Image (tube, rainbow, N blue to C red; front, side):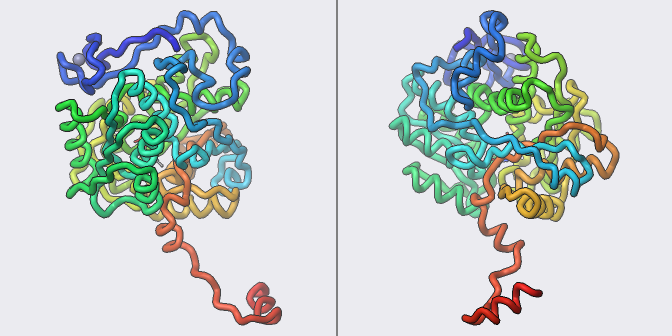
Length: 405
Ligand SMILES: *Cc1c(COP(=O)(O)O)cnc(C)c1O
Ligand SMILES: [Zn+2]
């Protein structure tokens, strides 16, 4: 663990109370400021003695590994996806498949850090609002830590696999009459009254764990930094975490180039992309977000301003893709690479395709698409978009006839 402090991202004030989620002085967003002096004396190879995964990068993390609550998160594959790359016109494409985390999404990276910190603080009740994956992840880590867990879900719009996980791990699953933004408002109220320790990504310890996806990508590419990294953007913490990790690697002198961080939103849920198009530093919330990609169906992204900063200051980009483009990219990943991701995750690949088509990205760039979650989280969407099973008679001739079609 490195020395660190929690500071306000907006006014710089230091924040001592570990239970507040916004700056007591200005209401701004919090962030963790790491002291990396000790890491500057290390080399990347020094970390390779530990197995790949979130805790390999403990020297960049603000939680003591002695309090670690872990289900071996991170260490996900980075695929070189040539066939996919050829299909979308960008040969040097890689996919970081976060769907192979313990609960099937990148949220486990933040949750191992957040729940370990909760344990450090002596919290016994944790909670979050969620479009699905955050609750699945928190429920699992709370179970592992022996904590009580409450999750606030928007009624009706949560993918089946995610709901099943939260129930399975024994969380109190509360169905809130409203969308994600309403569910988060209630969870925050509970946290403000100290009824639970909040583990949404407004909690600055979550992005600290999520930084590990960038550390791994760079590690897996042997410190040959890619030109661009593309992520789906919902509540916008993940792209912020990736940005923060880039800055920290640069600070310790392990990289000298930073990838163009590129965020992709769904067309029906695009407050950050709209702000980017207008070159604004702040965004207007979208009151009625709508998309098949439920994990990024968020109208008022908590870390939206941080995400805009990440994209502007790395020469990155932000744009939207339609639900049709998302589903088409999801199927392409399956059919070309044998990789099954959920719709939100396919937004990164759909986004790359669009950037190539519109000339924003060059076909010779080395690009990493982060595919954030597993396709099995949302089997309904897959079944709705694939041809149904073929009725077949019980004979070799019947099968042959079908195979020859
Ligand atoms: C949470 C989530 C996202 C969005 O990440 P943010 O940090 O909220 O931008 C994207 N895809 C999946 C699968 C997720 O679970
Ligand atoms: Zn402040």
